[in-house]
Amino acid sequence: MKRIILAAAAMSALFVAPQAFAASPTVTVEGTVTPACGVGAQSGGGVADPSEVVLGEIVDSNGNLSVAAQTITFGNIWCNGNATLTMTTSALDSGQGTPADSSSFVSKLDMVVTGKIIDTYMGGGESRTGTPLTAPINQAFETGTGQYSQATLNVTLPAGTVGNDRPVAGSYTGNIVLTAAPQ
Image (cartoon, rainbow, N blue to C red; front, side, top):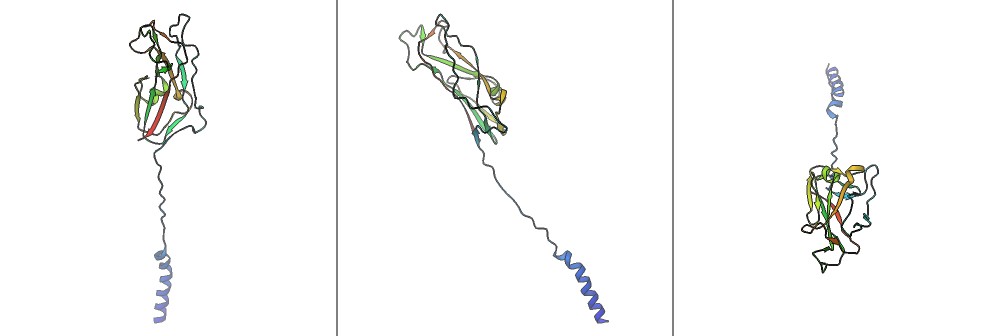
């Protein structure tokens, strides 16, 4: 009888044992993504990063400033999280200093940038010579192709000049810089 009880106990241990030794291992996988911003590498193609905008002749036959608004395009800019986007615009400068007849001539011209890239990512407004436009963007973003990389450039006489002031002869150069920095 003892043998039957021991055999029954041994058999019941076999049926319970697999449950007692079952395990469900858990492997935790972790990783991080450092906040970053960059240019180019648009997901799915993109706009080539322009190196310059050529305005050509910027005066009319009377020597007065006459530049039609220009559509300009920025290459792709991206940030993988919250970022600050800043646009700075410098004057178009002939490099000649103040003209001797500064009551009739100018050697620097203002640039004003407005439009879709500013409206979409910077909440509207304009970037004008000497006044940067800065906006926080509280999400990952990519300017991408088409309308979201475009802006409108206007060239104007500097503040305080008269409408008939004329730019001095020469080549004019300025910069528009769009900077993205992670927060």
